[in-house]
Picture (tube, rainbow, N blue to C red):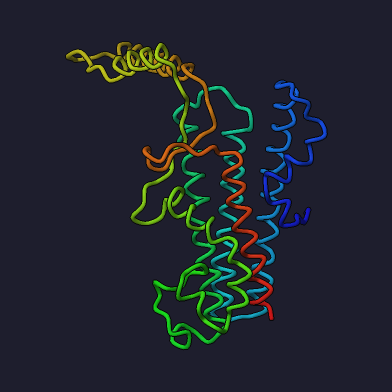
Length: 285
């Protein structure tokens, strides 16, 4: 397993590794951007695997509530994030242009929601592990809603002030995450955009969609009629799946615009890993 530095968890770092090869030619530069983006995603997946093992290691050494939040919380979530990131790689590889079929949209959207729910959940588990390490909620003088690594009251607790100061440069990221990419309770789930369409393709999509939803003629029907209808439906779906071009974006609330899967997803996971790397050594003391 490759250990990444915190700098290597950022997409910008991987782009910088290829600057020497970029010469302003779009075909050439696009190839190296593709290489940097793909490598970033795969290496962040490795970093998540490393986090899983580190969380188990520290949790088992500490026991009690710290154990539960690290082993049953952070480690389990890391496993879910790792699997979901692999599903993103499979359904939404860097550079894909072929429109997604509905089954791929379902898999990729589910994976995105799994990743972001568990990013937020991992940060929560880390905060609770800090609470448990320092004597529990009552000793901290907080209520459960105030257990947040980046929360105002949490950051004021003197017992872990050095820790929260080390995390302070990530505060803007967590606010952006909560505002634009948070599918947790009371929020809006994330969804992959299957394709972007021009006017012509959009009109054809609407026409085919209307055919797909057209009511059946009055029955009764024999087996051959049902077979033909199924074939017609499958053919319509195949035609719909050829329209437009996949652009690799996902949406939260439509009015907020779109997020590119790359580098947004691996950057966000990388930030969560970085936060865990700051917290785990403190918990291990």
